[in-house]
Length: 245
Image (cartoon, rainbow, N blue to C red; front, side, top):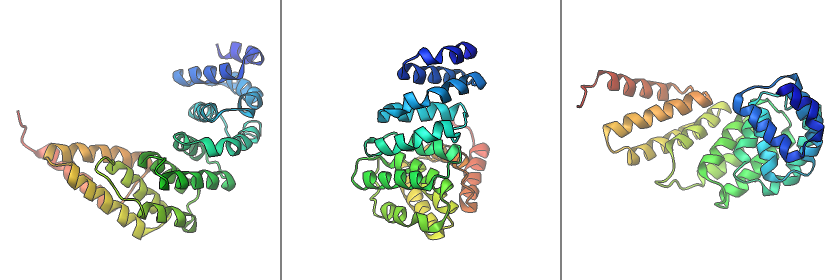
């Protein structure tokens, strides 16, 4: 199938290339034939891509572990990102995560994506969850503390609501930890704890909430000693607690 796709890729429309890439992503397979097809048609796929197509294509290519930074892809993806950037909203998290997974160090692009996310979040046009994903990925690509200054101001200016997820604040804490901002890390940890105290009104909810936070911490590589200690305490209590039948 991959070989046939590689041989006939020149006959497909750009949307069909994106769909084929999605299908290979769904089965978790990519080889030299798939890469040759994707790279060979990147200009057609991304040259006039809509924001949705751009986000989808980058996500599929990223998940297949195809070399996004290869000049044949990046030379087209870069101007395409800049062209549609003002229109990317919900897909900002996906794009930034894909670039982070591939170690993209194009500071102009990642700074532009971060700036777009800040503007949208401050204006109420981007959810806390998506903004947290962008911030965490940005922190892994730009770990310098000074690059975090503007983002810090936006986060501190946000008023948390009961609909927010504590996991998002833990993600912010992880980003702050990565850039070495202990004050911001402590602030985000406190927001996470305060939100949990209001939402987790029973022991069961507390345990389930901590399990979810543990998954998030593992995903983003959060290694706070205080969080690990709290997680271990809740886990130990869960294991030793009397069963409630």
